[in-house]
Amino acid sequence: MPRAITISTKVSGPFFELQGEPLKDAMRATIHDLIREGEAKVEQQLYPGHGVRTGEFKSTIHDRIVHSALGVVLSDNSVKGKVLERGRYWSSTGHRFKGYAMFRKAAQHLRKIANEIAGKHYKRAVKRLT
Image (cartoon, rainbow, N blue to C red; front, side, top):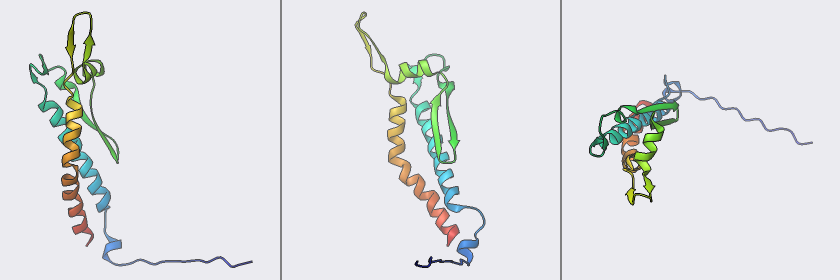
């Protein structure tokens, strides 16, 4: 019967003794910045004549960290939000409201800037690590 192979490794030095978790901190900061930017982008699209009469719906838009690796931008008023986002079709009146697609447009914007925001935070983390 073959003998088991055991490997042990000892790590030392400033890289391994660094206090805190720079890469996790960078991830959290990136998510935080992205959801703040997403919330601002959705709210920016809500102006009088474009989804806003009273400002009530705009006040329901907020961001939230779900857990360390997930953040969301959402509306507390899900019924009104769905109508404004996707629109509805009323064939009996002939009126077609296509929706404002605020969240979709905000998501497209975040996809464009995500690498830039992440790069800024991870660059800072690498400096802390080295």
